[in-house]
Image (tube, rainbow, N blue to C red; front, side):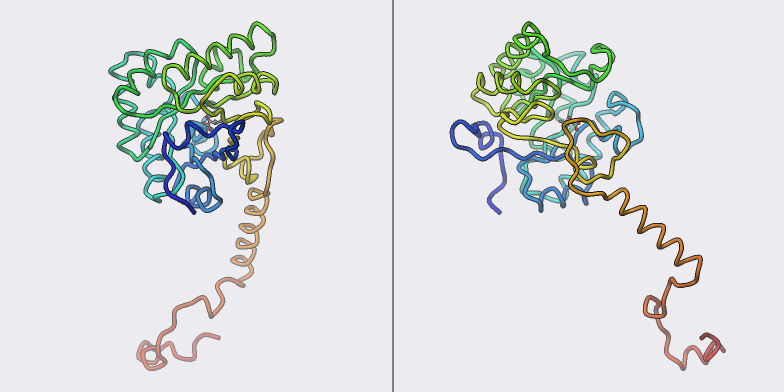
Length: 284
Ligand code: KIV
């Protein structure tokens, strides 16, 4: 594997310039980060999806900066080759530039090499504040889960020509503000293509079609650990939930039948010491 990926190394990764597509995976703890890194991901996103797939919340809006920092630190401790990107949670970049920079700094101190935040041109002042504190920023446009109340649920965005042009304008504003990449979520493929064509920084799609400069999926979706919903854009490459339940059920059955543990799975004592305890020969 090559050297550690950085924001300057990623910001020129356009497929139209011959670059390989960027691969981003979410991870929320050390084992998932090791797996994503060993699989060759370019970027590991400590997504606020942690709220739903790990912490049991019904949306992403419940997670805090402190919780994001906790998960970011677990990922960063594995020292992956991939760049670690931490999601700024809802309300961590909405109130003031000072709060925004402080919250971004907490994620960088936890080990993030960049932060990601949701929203369009209205976020430019906060993005500029973070970048002026020397922290690289990834934008996130389209179906932005932190806007689920305002967007009326998890709805594909940019379906009309007017809305699509609005997304293109937002993407240009984010790139102009200095975002080194932009995640495009939940929009028709032609809109993902228009935005990708309009920008000199890479786009990373999730439900935004095949023309983006990279693709991102949630770890638990790719591996089939999360089975409660299957959005159109998810492709499952494993069935770890079902395989895991099957393995755990076999363990339970072995415990109940006495098949676990086997003698080979137990620590031994010398016969003399067992004799001294009056145990030798007592067990079959
Ligand atoms: O939190 C997350 O997992 C994300 C991805 C869906 C891009 O933001």
